[in-house]
Length: 385
Ligand SMILES: Nc1nc2c(ncn2[C@@H]2O[C@H](COP(=O)(O)OP(=O)(O)O)[C@@H](O)[C@H]2O)c(=O)[nH]1
Ligand SMILES: [Mg+2]
Image (cartoon, rainbow, N blue to C red):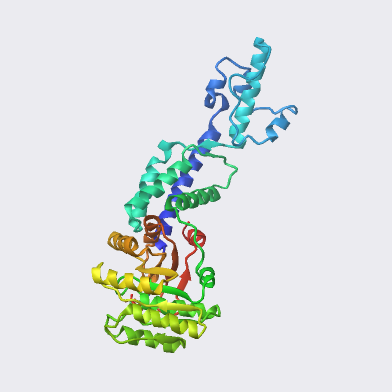
């Protein structure tokens, strides 16, 4: 889970760190007069030639004030009397400041050219980790915007600096909308009605059972609607879960109207004072007109408070296009990414966030009832960056 993405991002971090360290080292090694030639075109005191810079007591307080982030004093200081000797003295002082600055702070500024290769490599790395191209480009652009022109001093913790920059770039490029966490949302209405939808075999029924377990752990009651009346054995599959988890289930026969099953389940929830209604639904492999109509009717009749699209974690471009199509018709509220335990790459989660602009509520991490994790971007970023 997220392994390859993590590996690729950490390779990028290391390369960036090397670039920064190399540049900081070069800056430190530069003599002040040559590195800041613009400041001292005229000959200055021999003090600069070979000897180390003596720091006189009068200059010490100046040296103590941090220079990080401040521009070096420019050619035109506000000196009222343009006397040649004063000028020379001033230049000398500036020279000392510049030299000590290079030695003590090693501040550098990242240029576009220096990181161009790194960013190109990052784009490839993201693609390898299953991030879709459009998303990868957005992330790399955000990274470029954050890094080019950034001043870094050798006093700064470079690892922390890089981590923060990568996280910021990810958050801004993914444009994740604010959303209320699941357990908060379900408190807002009773019964709170959840519809699970998505392609065949993606994990709708299994995820539904996992959500029941999560609700029970949080002292919430649930009732299930066996509204997949299409696929053979689907009702029995859900009944088994209901039995194991000790929750009520409402069913009709195969071929019955799924919207009616949902409707009856909501009525049962109301009469038994149950907190959450979970509606299972049928999937087809392709986006199918009948299925779309069936789901539209469930939504019209049951008015779900949360429409969760269940998507396999390693979803590629075709799956993303499918979710977008569903979203266009049914306006989904969020996604559950299943089977993340079998996806060693993890990049598709970033594409889902970026391309759908919908929250990922959970990730499925196995076949057991407890294998469901809330997807909190902060935590996920901590894991991968
Ligand atoms: N490894 C793994 N398998 C899962 C996960 N979620 C679902 N599955 C498996 O995927 C298969 C299809 O799941 P099911 O819930 O029947 O899919 P549905 O057709 O969408 O209802 C089953 O074998 C599940 O055990 C998961 O997070 N990890
Ligand atoms: Mg199912």
